[in-house]
Image 1 (cartoon, rainbow, N blue to C red):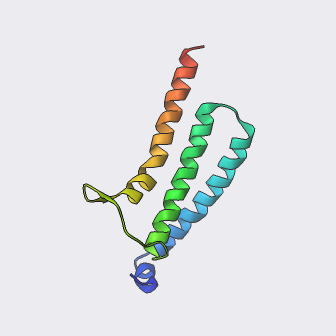
Image 2: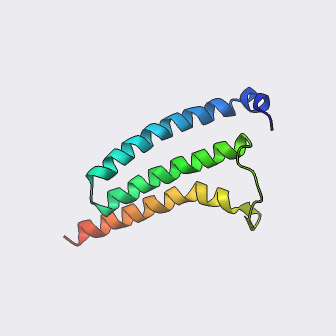
Length: 105
């Protein structure tokens, strides 16, 4: 897929906005990470960083800068599965840690 095809359907603009907002959220997450020792917050920060890494992965794949053999599981790319769902796993762990820490006090 070439850039003209990507730009014509608005995907490039959407991706650029997502990259910009993700970069700002990642910057703030790193600032929070340096100021907290709470495991729940650290998992939230890791989720935000994983989400941004997933966006970068999608951008590299979309623009053809990251190509190579894909490992498939049930027809789905492992890279896409990990990049799309890792942040959700971190958020789930953060919520579980938060709930457990608040009930044990």
